[in-house]
Length: 417
Image (cartoon, rainbow, N blue to C red; front, side):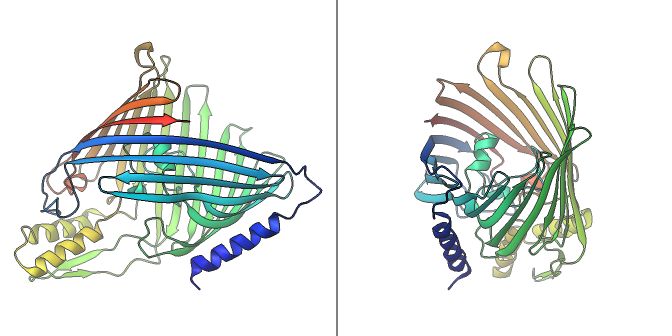
């Protein structure tokens, strides 16, 4: 029996036990449901790069369209509840039904909750790069939609856990996720998380301390501190052992690559510090700086750039094989070490109902980056339409210019019920 089968066997066993009535609660049924239907059409720039010389063959297209329907529901009976999120999506020429969430929660008493199943959980407050959002890989997101929808429209992780509340407002949580694999690449890990959240400085500081297990054990820290009604300072940081990115040592004259083994011992800090400000006219500004020491250094990037140059254009089977290896090597959301992020937003542009958000993710190591502009208008309380444009910039073979999709223009609509 597989690990996942064992996991769900225990889950359903726990469900059976929890459904046994107890006299400590009023055993009444309740059922709530909400839903959303979304659709978009995108025009995308399509040009070759050294890393992707044939975009069409590699799966890149000059357009994209998709529609999806999401249904959330919660069924409760006394202290037991079952929460689900089902999502049916169709994109270009394929369809998919995803069970994003399906977990049972049992309220043992006023302070203790236990749960089991598939959950969507997110942590931290950074808008750009978020070190403590450990259950998620941004590469699986469709970042065309607003951030809240983007982060929610993904498949959760199978886990069991508990949440313990304290009278002082703090909470302690533990979760174990067997065979966690956010991108479904077949490289799962048994990941556990222990977390305490509380308040300090008379309630002015909201903080969370975390400890992680799995392949990259370590610790995490998040905190935010508000000054008045207009300013907030925040930090999300982790110290974890090892590195997910593999180091390229050299490339031979015949274009064969030589890699170093994955770093499994050194501790790699990953930290985002940010400042948020609300202006008198209602506009909001966020500025963030991120240091990711697990990213490629200038020396490591020079070796990667040399390898890309040597195999472009592809002239031999070995060069084609090497190009494929480089594509897999660089299959990460970010690759370098130093980034800046800016978000300027307003929910009532010029006193209207139009919402707008301008974002910039800039890589300080090579000067490349990405700009996004979103404009939304609520047609009714339930229907919203939006326009999203993105543009990447940088020199040839810089981080954000490695892939062909350097710009896009998208129109979308969302209906909630």
